[in-house]
Image (tube, rainbow over all chains, first blue to last red; front, side):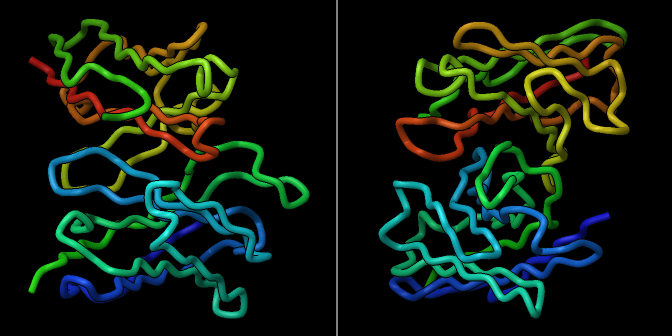
Length: 124
Length: 111
């Protein structure tokens, strides 16, 4: 079954860029869209955005000005960068598979496989 | 303020039935976008439970069921067990935001 693993720094200084990578194993990165979702401590889930292996992206409007996602199919990885970090960006960041796609279009907006999550703290 | 509204908490005794509501609007659930449900035990990643309003993921017990009508959806859990104690999240797509939206989450306590 599909497995995902997040990696990246656990501590980012305010105003700096948060960068994370998700590695996909036991599955094809060409089979779906891939997403990033975050959860501030003690709070609910927030969708950040998704990317297709072709490079097509869609970002949460509230984060769009600061977010960039990319994909490296040869390494079976996709990545997240979030510029100008603040304390409000402190959260557990999850990568997940979804939405499901058909002919390159997202058709089913659910997330069936998740990474274990990685805590990123924005603090000096 | 989440786009999808869930009660902060629900509770029930072992063996009982509980429901968790998820209220949306005309740009998400009311626009016929499907609702999906996740279970999250504190300290762990969310687990995918229900997709397409009422379809259980393979391996999810039949005790879990989903429904949708108009601008709302519900998750029902029958025969409540101690292991069901967790946070539950609904999720859909919103055409006004052109993106995915989650409910604020509901904490289920098994008394």
